Amino acid sequence: MDMISRQFETSRAIFLGITSLVLLPILLFSQERKTGKSYLDNTFWGALVYASKGKIDKPINAKLNSRLKKAFPSFQSFELLGQHTQENVYKEYVNWVVPSNEINLGFESKGLTENGGMKLLLKLWRKKKVILKSDLIIFPDKPVLISGPEWKEGRLIFVLEIQEKKAAS
Amino acid sequence: MTEKEELITRWIDGELNTEQELEFSKLKESDPDLCASLKATAENVREVLRSEFNSDAEVPYGDFFNSQIEKRIRQSHAKESEVRGVLNAGLIWIKSPFTWASASAFCLLLFLSNGNVNSTVVSTYSPDPSVRIVSAEFNEEAGATVIKLEGLERIPDDTDFSVNHIVSYDRQGPPGFVHFYNKQDEVVYIMETDEYGLPNVF
Amino acid sequence: MNFSLSDSSNEEEQIYRNEGSVEIENSNKERDAQLIERCQSGDYTAFDELITAYRGKIYAMIFNMVRNDADAWDLSQDVFIKVWKALSKFEGRSAFYTWLYRIAHNVTYDWLRKKKIRGAGEFNDEMLNEAEPGALTAPKTFDTPDQNVQRAELRDKITIAINSLSEDHREVILLKEVEGLSYQEIAESIGSSIGTVMSRLYYARKKLQETLKDNNYD
Image 1 (cartoon, rainbow over the protein chains, first blue to last red):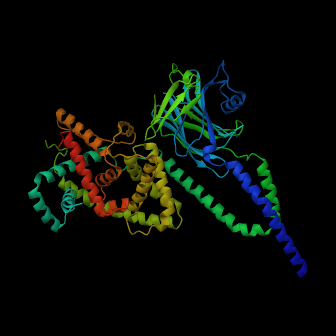
Image 2: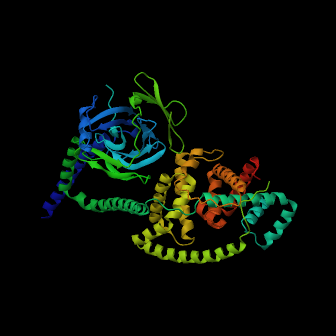
Image 3: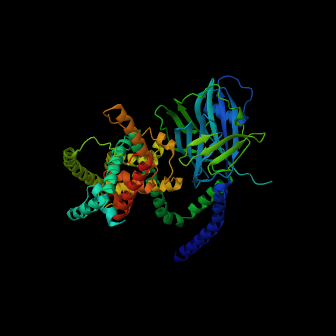
């Protein structure tokens, strides 16, 4: 019995050793892939959208259109009023999404999370007044949609999306 | 600070002891104008400060304020307990070969998958009492975090957003200034964030 | 021109107020001690009572420094979270509220450092206007319309001059004149010596005097 248990112990030790050798690089590599090298690699895409109950001549791309329809089912169509991409979003630095004199969305990065997201502090301004403050975590392909004030017959919606930096071709 | 300055400060604040009072009376005799002038300023300042600045104020949404603190403390406790629990259990788990087998399978799965986690709203609030946050949560169907607000001041219908198709931007110029450009490479907005975080759009 | 805002001597009222406030202070100390003991044994409801008791003071103190209600709201929460974590280390050698103010001071200064807000020699009109939501001013009624105008002008000048002080000087003046803390309490709150407190008070008042003299309000 002693010999058998010793053999079992030895086999178990060998098994654990091999498993950890295989496991460790997989864990490290998958973590690296998720968080990226640094927050400087992260790019944001921001847009201001007009949501209308009527039809619109210039509809937006199908994917965003579908998302917006599911998030705001009372609106029929969505028009892109403005958009831009912001690269190298620095921590603790205020960035602005599609500015205007009437309404502004500012956001600050508060650093990466362990599971590949980014902590953001959002502030929505109506002229010089903060009307919304939000701490949230954003992930790629999981944008933030904020319904803003009414305009014309519909409503303005801010879209903020974090994009992973594309590798140079 | 000189002894003279200390005496004057204590006198203004009514903090002279007996010995210091004698010292001060000599000082006052030698320079009555300085003492009187400083005291008058201090009294004026005191009165204005007490009327313009509060030592106590009503915290907006007091109950919500308290509940947010409790929520953050509990979240931080939960995180700490989780870490402690994991460390303690680690030793037991590490001995089992079955744990390693399933862990390696899980890691392979994680590596191959995109890490299916959703954006999360940690906290949301509006300092404007006329604004109501209808909802702030992840919408599974839309695959997005959706924040819905009511009670916002309407934007005038004649507001022109046609210039908002911004192609590029740069941060040249004074710190806190950002230039936004359209397709024709013309500046459409200059955005300034002042040191208090207030946006100024030009 | 020697122009004073004070209407008359208030010595008797001062004595009466002092006696009354000593009683209140003692009763608060007793209440705090009981609540802290319960907190230290893990009773969160006691901490909730402490928050309710002090949140107004902390919010006001931070608002006076940062002049923005949203940020003051956030920072006040940060203060109480730090207080909860540090309560086990509170030994009662100083009064609870001076220990609390110390934490508030540290939180505010860390935030100001990050935001790089330096008030020395600079004044921002917008900040004064933005202060409206938190400001609960109750203007005094004066004797004559002329005096009303003059007092209002003096008030504005003083407010501008105070906002032009550096953070260190402004904080000390506010803790002394608005919060009514003693030199010792101020020193404990800001983590400095009594000498430093008095020195800052003296130079803050001197600077205010010079500013007001320049505007012929001496």
